[in-house]
Length: 236
Image 1 (cartoon, rainbow, N blue to C red):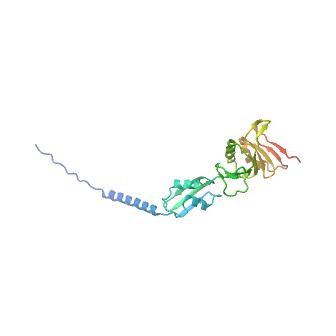
Image 2 (image 1 turned 90 degrees about the vertical axis):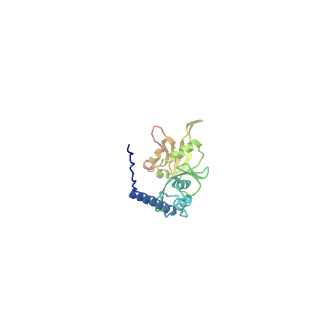
């Protein structure tokens, strides 16, 4: 009986693939080392009009131009979002030390005389800064209506809001019965007065087109549910 001879299998090392693998590992290691040694080189801030660049840089932690890896983009965004006037922020970093900060600011809606704060479109309040031209809320508003007021005014065009001088909470009453608890009296910069409720708040965007050219001054009633507009001129 003949013994079966075992065949020797030669294993060929694919040197080309091996060196390619080493090259890729070396390249990634080099890039990683470069990144961990790289400091922030440039900071670009986009979208801010009220918040100053230096405020954003200071609160972000980038003032001293630290190493790129020190703060993640999420941490930078969280730091910048702590500013009252920042509604949204997006941070991007690249491998060349560039940090881009895209900011969306909250709008200043009105000044609340009751607690001496500026009220912002994101619901926050601030005592920092001065913002001329914003209307004044002159009396107390119940909390649920107050929250709705902020939400609805945030949908109004800035140029329409700038036409208002004072906001007064003025519920519609019939004796002791509340007919409409969302009604406000607006005193306009042009001398007119406007009654409006939160359901019809979007009609304020029509004011500049339709009512600033009135020959006589008076009171506009824009709170009607049927879409009609009543104008009553002031008594002499």
